Image (cartoon, one colour):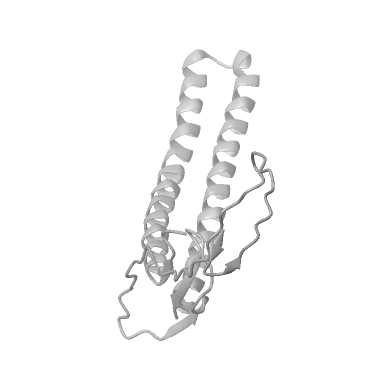
Length: 162
């Protein structure tokens, strides 16, 4: 090929499939795709801690921030302990009742049917009121625990998305 008086020389090369690649460099700017507004009712409470910084990667369920509620957390532990001991005490009472009823059953042959029934009813009545009182106490303590737990959870903000 000539351009004016000068000749340009070309070298030809056979191309095989897959040897030619067309590339292009582009500049990409990324921006946030998802966002959410999170808050809690401060109710005059101080912020206890913020556990993430700008640019940190978070997963759904990660604790992000928390209000100061140490007194409530301590009461929650106390309620939890009282629930655990109340349940163990209830189990102990039920075990004692069964132990006495088993002992009575072992002596059943040495007494009349009316006497056996009377003693059995006496044992059951003796433990019925104690067990009911303890079950009521456990129920009330469980309600208090659940309410306080919800309050403490309200003092925390968790990520709801990745």
